[in-house]
Amino acid sequence: MKALSGRRVLLGAAGPVGALIFSAIVSAIILVLTRHNPFEAFGAMGQAFSRPRVLVGTVNQVSSYYLAAVAVAIGFKMNLLNIGVDGQYRLAAMLSAALAGASFMQGIPSVVRILMTIVAAMLIGAAWAGIAVWLKISRGVSEVISTIMLNAIATAVIAYLLSPGRLAVQQGNNLGTRPITDGGMVPTIPIPKSITPLYTLLLLALLVGVLYAFLLSRTVFGFKIKATGLNPAAAVASGISVKRMAVAGMLLSGAVAGLVGMPELLNGPSHQYSINFPSGFAFTGIAIALLGRNHPVGMAFAALLWSALDSSANALQGVGVPNQLVVIMQGTIVLSVVVAYEIVRRYRVVLEQRDVARALAQSRKEPVAA
Image (cartoon, rainbow, N blue to C red; front, top):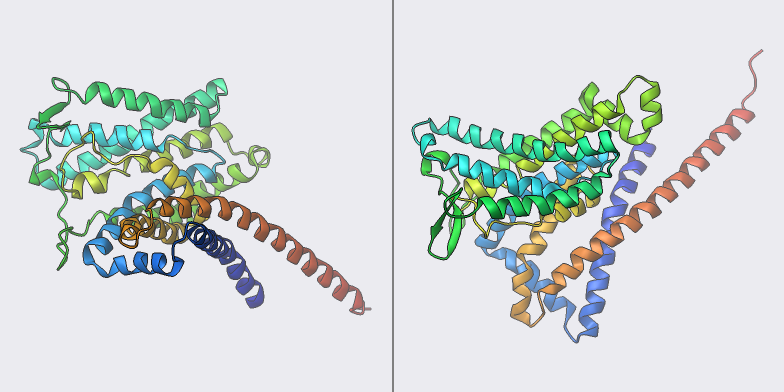
């Protein structure tokens, strides 16, 4: 059993580690072909983290990346591909920011205001994801198509509402919701030698990760999610409603997606949702979920790696290397991780077949009891 457990851990780590090594090799080859020194480039990326500001910015970015990955992973467990995380979190961030900055919220206690903002974001994200799952179970529309279209619709809705006279105010060249006052913001932790404070809503991402792990491994609901995703026909035969689980899984995915913008909104320096609010987390979440194999711990390391690559991109310009190399590395990781997992899966099947054959041979050699 110990040998099997150790082999399982090694095989589980082989996929992501192999993908990282392969992406590093490909990036080094590209650097050599473009007449750059790979050692200087990788060294500059590593040296960037000697600056506290870069290190803190990396950790802050992890929270949003991790929440996006968990939102995607919940869909993956149900065999659903929630491409709409980007639209869900941006719409949730915009409307919850408008709520948090509203004048009637000023007299409400700080803790209540913050909780109202977070809950509102979860409900809005879940509602927007609910449209896609309703189309799937009632009309058979693929969630991939519907969530992609809902992203475009969310962009249009945000553009309509984020205008003067509706939910936005003009501040110079910036257009955004009413700024959230101090009572509606979550305190941050100042870090010595860094102009960027540490986001305390990193704890929110940690809490979501713990709840995600507990849900999947310790609850009947989590078992139903995994069973439905692995084999819908067997799930139906055992009395599980696939449609009901699809609705529950997609709503839960959307609720987590609604939290993606909360660290930047409630801990960030802008205190509002504006036209400069970060976007594009949907495909980043998919990549991180794939790299972390939908595991809560694996996705945490994957989110940290992705954030580290993003933070070190500017350091490449100091040695004359285009920072687009980071994008190449990230894309190579996504492509190679899929191939690496398939290779590992096939190798695992071969090992299991050998174990079965060895066990059968051993049982034939044992004498039959009289």
